[in-house]
Picture 1 (cartoon, rainbow, N blue to C red):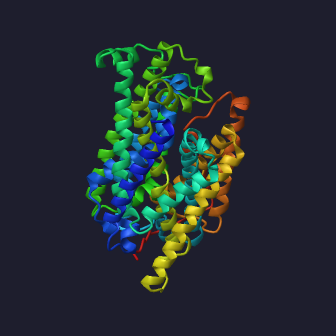
Picture 2: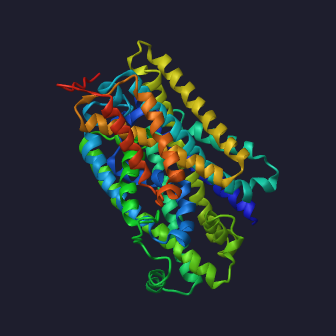
Length: 491
């Protein structure tokens, strides 16, 4: 069986299972089913599924590859995630449940007003569209190189196939469907990770003790870097990880939409605590995989300069050097990552657009019209994602694409600053001035990151997100006025 036939069989098989789950979960689906799963999602299912949603295709391919240059410094970022998830569970989730929010950006309207609400939601729509499209692009590009190019199928057609499939299986069930398909995606990604580690172990003729000993004694296992000028410095990763988790999970509609689909606050908190602990061990295994792949590459005399980027390490070893079983395992994990990168995104973008931009919750329209609008926005954002992916492909420059992805991550800074100001102060921001503050902050941080090493000898790492949020917070404070009482009225 050729590698192309293997990829096609894996892809079709996985897709059939996904559509079967969609059919089961979308029966008798309503708008509430689509947006918040009728608030009946079991917390343990959400917790397990969020592992796959958090990992995505970027983690699946990039984290093992980064081990060569970054060693295990990424783990300090993961420990920062833990701190961030604690804040999400104890500070943010109680607010979301108390106000019975469908879109978390409705909080900004209740706290500040129209312009701040639209600003926060708009920054999310921009951030998530670019970020998710980039994640999908990475995965689709690998499948294009190994399968569709050999059949003469254009990249645009490949992209439309993926987007159409994701559109169809999330169209009716929304969050309820995604909660359950996430569990399948998590299972395949973790299975691919563990099975590949065992296969490399066998290829190196190690037992498990010998494998972990070789990783521990290798150049790759260093976790703590103390040079403050190094972007791998441990405290930069720790602080950055904390605010990445708060911003890109706790203040992200896609991730929180799954959490607020739990029946109550207590279940949602159990979900976050369980998910965060499991995520630590899963990320550690990804780093172990990266180390053993590099050790294996060295043992067979593979020239690492043959890799275009470090992202190619995992697929190259799987497809070319470890045999068809490893290739199959990698493919199933990769296909799962491709689906997980976009299914929740389309639903979250549609939800935020309907509730934050169109203000559908307060419009006096019948259920049938609301459903039509929901379908239109769901379809519309599928087109948006496909368009961005095709733009990435047209640019065809990894350095430019990764810069765009970094810029997209900056846009979470204003959202962080807005929520922090609302939660931790008793002041009213200048609602009409908020959009200008939100644009200035990431723009300034981009210039700061670009020139700080030349100007002051300091290289920013993940802590730049905190700086972004802090600048937003301080500017909001500078143009604010004191309130005697904060009244967040429920709808």
